[in-house]
Image (cartoon, rainbow, N blue to C red):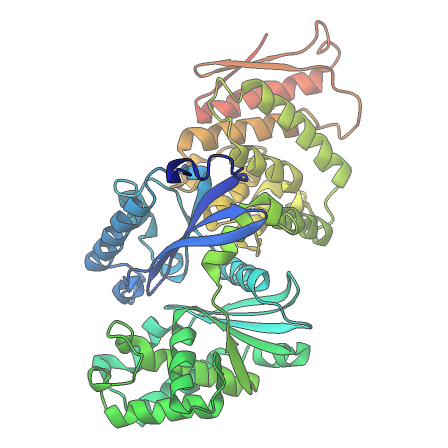
Length: 509
């Protein structure tokens, strides 16, 4: 008789990877745990604690202690679901609330004591891109599609086709912020709705014409706010198509809300207690979106930001390295000297390989950012040769760079900012994902990569050896190579003085 215990002994298991994505949103935190097998994502577990982080933002943009504590408590719960996960298999992205919070770094520092995974604060444009990736990988439509995602503090708008977004925008309006502004104390009056709808239309004045000119064949809504609204709309009339909503449906829901008079008295079948306080604001925003963009009907996608993050975590599911595309676009727009950028990259990576282990910077992410900095350190040249490092730093800090988190972009900008001349540590930002020691070492390596290619010529550098012990950085050229090169030697002497600011002693062996 067959044994149940041995039933699967001959079954061959495929290679699988377990990954997790956490979206630290303004209204809720969303955790998705999945396994990736045969190039597909299989969702295993979801967790969605309501935090309303944006509720704690005051007029100066500071998160209240109560709000931060709610966030920390939620992270403790999430950490329990992620026990046993390696850092490389977990990605955590924070959106509008932490983008706007002046004390976001304080929150992230405190989070480290209860949550062992790094938190990336991403830009609105990057959030929009990841939302689109989630939809593109799980919904099939022919032609262009408009994707709308209403969050707690911002609303994202994307038009794209296939896996490629054409235009991405993040508008500062969300169900938490609009609740605090237009539906205080839960009042559900027609004048409250009118003000909120008008405000949403005003916020869209900068994008509505451009979006309508591009056009789309399908309109997709994502995330909790739109999901609840569409589900409620489907219950209004048995003739309504499931997972779709029209403007008339939205107005019917608004009338029902006004009839209730207050969010606590709002009794709609399918509306949960924790969604009631922000329902009216989300509904008003969606009405404003429909009116401004002349949307006739919207359908629901179950995938959004979290799923977009998951798909990008698996190399086999990536359509293209988005950071490479961002860098190449920037190089084209700012007429980067590609040959020279590649020279600097080659030398910088050669030096990195020699010291990465003793310096404890043998990390793919650090290497990648160092590489992008080597390739883009001269984007500021188009503005002015004088002060190029300041111009490059400014451009890289303030331009949209899809694929980079805010902190990754800030590190990229900082490396470019200090690739030459004096190093002013007072201007170096504080990082939460990267430690100071790592940042100093990357700056030193990029500076040497740039300095050694100052002649901007191929084939003139010999084999250069770099070694380190404690704070000493020893650079060795072939015997007698520096003789007859007084300018080059003087540049190295200057660099010795500059690097002392980073507590490095550059020595010629």
